[in-house]
Image (tube, rainbow, N blue to C red; front, side, top):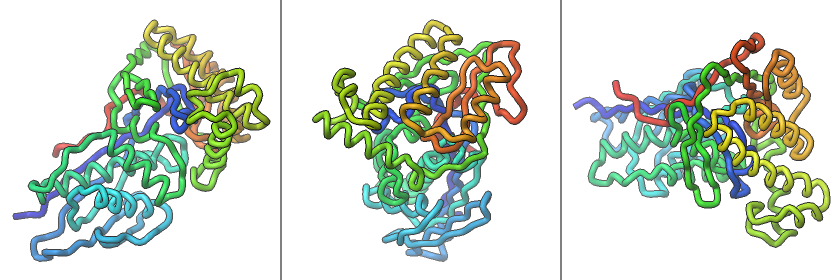
Length: 356
């Protein structure tokens, strides 16, 4: 009998509104996109019983890795994600088998499209499916929210980035023609129709790459935690505007952004339900001003990309992702022409196994 094989695809995401709110138990409105990462997994041949090695080939980088299922050693770069996912799946009790994995995709790392979460999710789905086929008696029920939490642990403990759950949940739960209103206090996910009609959402890469673990991302998260300590609240979701206004700088502006961004998410949901795309453009602009001035995660390269979109006639534009580089999202009305170098995005299906 030939070895078991499977293939999993996980999309990247674009966050329409709600940046740096997930780790503050706030609200966000992301959607999955068509582009993502694919992991092809194959069990080892029958003539190698008991082999518990995992061999990984990152095709786009032309790089390889090999490690044991039992106790993967620490590593850097993309290898940290692969080793961390295997270790965390094993710790969670999922059946795993020795395998060869091939990673390929269309998401540039560091462009603000959540290539890291797509990699984590695709690895999870492929490895869980392969292990379940090889050891059906040990198979476990897969809850996608639990997989999102597992992926976040990999980000925290193996990669060193203190991210929230936004990227993983968007990749796992994405739906065609819908954004996802996510409440990070309850983890309730409500699809919201995203009817673009003749309008277009486009991305423009700033050309500047970011890495959460080494950028100011962790610093911003620490500042929010300090604001919560001073306010004596468990998260900024429970903070009041009057109390936030009394915080010292820069904590006042950091916390103020989170409160205002949560409100922008609610306004965006109402606008989408009313098919009011011009209002979405205004919210994109307001969100970017806050990310630039209050959260201070923009850069000169990002500002140049925003200016290029606005000059071309965008109704609204803002950086997407954690900031400190990456891509900029622009909204264009019917008849307006995005500049050269942009890439149109639309809401697409979430992570899934690929049938062949």
